Amino acid sequence: MDGRDKYLQPNSVVIRREKRSLDRKIKTKEDYWKECLTPEEYRVTRENGTEPAFTGRYWNLHDQGTYKCVCCGDDLFDSNAKFDSGSGWPSFYEPVSEANLETNVDRTFGMVRVEVTCHNCGAHLGHVFEDGPEPTGLRYCINSAALKFKGRGEQ
Ligand SMILES: [Zn+2]
Image (cartoon, rainbow, N blue to C red; front, side):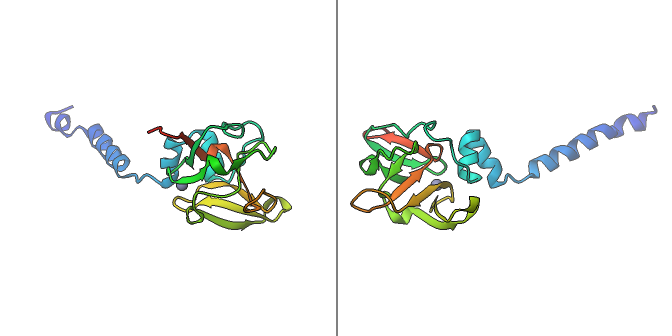
């Protein structure tokens, strides 16, 4: 190796180029959700999954408080509207505000159902059925994995 080659240091040029392309890699929304959510929360909210009945963290919770979107933190349901549907999923007869939800017709699995998503971030939450109790007659059947419960008075 003569003096000139020593100072060119071809390897360091390659390393610098790789680092630059890493810095420039733009984080996708999917990357962001994967970092913030557990694998189960991601599967349910971003891939339209359903948790198995009687396995979620909230189907049998009776505490007073608010159920928020696990992805964006928007208020979705209040414990006052929660009822025991026997389905194994948290069930509510009304949302905190209809403006916080979106509904879409879901024709997967050979059924026609109405899917419920978070208006703010698009998270899949569950489905709404018309066999709920008074006063609305609706049953919002929601995955625990899509919710984050905050008790009354909790910060
Ligand atoms: Zn959300």
